[in-house]
Image 1: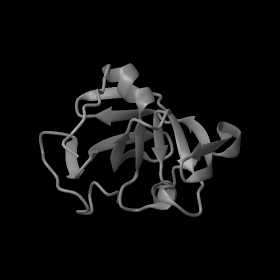
Image 2: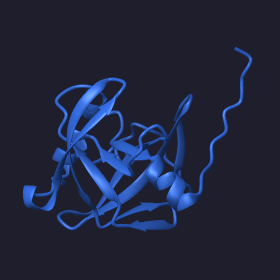
Image 3: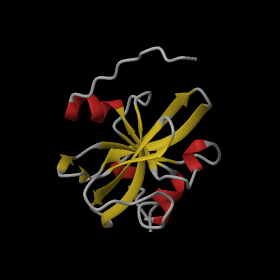
Image 4: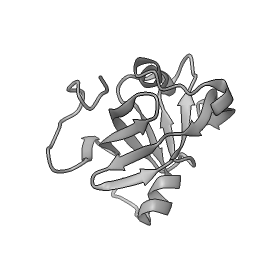
Length: 145
């Protein structure tokens, strides 16, 4: 069971976009794996993540999603919090609302600590998907602070 099914965030029948915490956008979505079929999850939109999809380690383990070594590539991430090991491969698809994205390049976290082992949500959807698939453009505007 992923975050989308266990009550960690509000649910709505007609929309995948969920504003769960101030300043962050979360979406309920489904991924399709050749190993496990449809798997529901809760993902944060992270425009600072240059990849397409990153799955947190507990989500990968719980749903037995880690691809075999001969079907994936080791990949080291580096971010503000430091480095982290992943395996990179493609899932069958990712569904966001009524849009299905075929063969998204996916990073399967192998982290032992930090945000990528969080169970508050199941992973990240990065700017590779939001800009290419949806043409999303974000504009920064000063606030009152």
